[in-house]
Length: 315
Image (cartoon, rainbow, N blue to C red; front, side, top):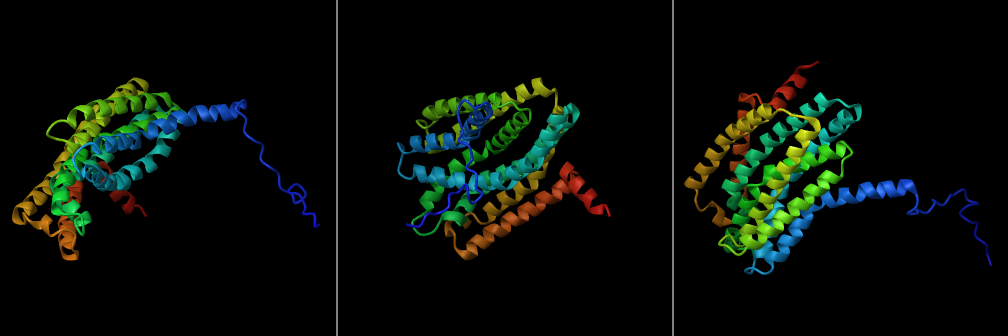
């Protein structure tokens, strides 16, 4: 029989097994579990909502899933990108004890997220029926399915900004090495969501009530974290954030007017569904609305637009 050389003879070293008694392992586990639990609150809420929706009318679960799919587009494009850029800055300021820098980054993050998500919410609420039709309405997905999904999407759109600001404040506490506060907020969000869902799903809203409950729950979680953040790091510029919110709303007005006018001119646009020609028309209207919003950003001198222009002027 041929004897193969052992791993140790080949120069490999087996990694030592983790032991629960190891202080480093226990510390990692103590930080990891609250982080995972608090970061998973949105997924948990969606699971609970689908369970509730399964007891409602046929198509409720599909309406919920399709609405979440559409809503995840601005979250994945805007929210994730902003937090990816700003989280290292938050961590650096927190590590160096730079309170002013930390507060300034939080205020800037609020302005940035509101500028991107307020117009997104307006687009989903005003033009959601057309977006759903272009994305899903073909084959077995009928016009009736679009009409069921649209109120659900509108319910989620109402809480899009609150959800993103809540997630951003979670990152703030992570940068401060505080994992218990986000966990407490996640418990609050889950409790409010379940309680409101049990009530609203039995009202005229039906499956749309589950989306409204989700939005209200994250709004409550945002307020909870905002109050605690103010106590922890001090005021992070309420006036500046309110001014930014006002500019975000003002920048959304041309978008809202354009989308409302398009629905008046072509009220049956969504009925054609996801054909190539119709999807192109809907995409063209959304592109025009986006360009109008960007123009308003420049006119109102939104902070990130000003910084972008300054960076391009530098040699």
